[in-house]
Image (cartoon, rainbow, N blue to C red):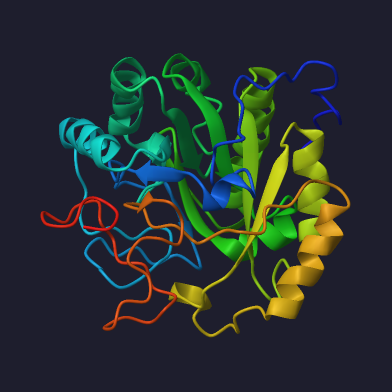
Length: 308
């Protein structure tokens, strides 16, 4: 569907920010620096067939999960408290639990944080449906790191992944949902890159659906200005609960293939929408929890800071 010219960012895309201290963009920073996700974005404008959002789950470490949703006022207060207690924080992110740009609170939080906490890199995760429409607001809010979830670039694959999309007051379903999403994703990605934002693309690896297609996704997003790709193994949930989770061998093989086209980020922790701290240090491996589950700390009254 996309007929945009290739390599549109040739000679024009100059990143605004240094990502060397961003734990989700730099392998070395991943183990040294922290991020704080504030869950100010509950609404979502698309339905992915692998997505199940639970607002009040303390024991799952995956996107779309938070203890509860907060507003910009509480978010700013929490950021200030966190910075006092954890000096390694370098990034402020909004990653849900819905879509960042489907919620006005996201950009309000970023605008206010830009003034109050200029030390923090502002990072936003989005499905990209509204990115091109709101790119001026995103830019003015000082967002310099952007993650777009792009799981397909071919309609035959994409229509299997998305149930519906709500765009400009109209609900699209099936093939039409993917077509409008794809068009807006590519336009938004290109525009963000042209403005100097560092763009990472997240792609959920779904066995039997897009595992052989992600090389084409890598090629397309690189041509539109993305500089980094993060392939995330699907968790069998929602309408895809019957599918097998991808094996480690499959994930590594696809990453290696896509790595010949675009740099791969291989340290993803499937961060929650209320994650805080250095990845992997959020209460992991406590006696009552499995070692791979990180307890949320953002909204605990007694355990905000790392190590409390």
